[in-house]
Length: 142
Image 1: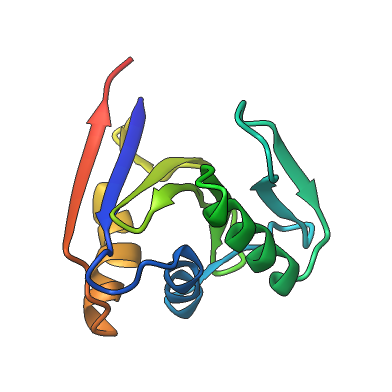
Image 2 (image 1 turned 90 degrees about the horizontal axis):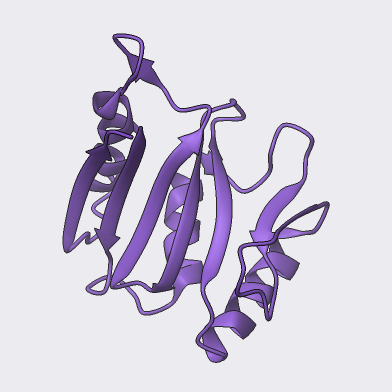
């Protein structure tokens, strides 16, 4: 199963760093359980994820430079220091794709627990009045 959430935050900001800060505000962290950041480096166009200990300021600098170069931004986010994660992928704030692939919460043995993701992403945006223009939730069977 592949599960995706597509977000449009273009009414909120044109800066992807601003959107990542909102994710942090609602409980999604950039650090994995080992205290490392998983991200796409400058110049990467083949999804070769780096996993290293870097500061949030260094990550935001990398993202800003990637935005200037119009490169794909990629950062894995983890919920409340847990194992559940999402891959945040974006070229702009108009189309942010969240790939639900890291220790995906499932129900009935194989289906994505979309209610959990709605409650811990979309509904939390609403609760802090983040101006989310649109969202789409999808699941595809292999």
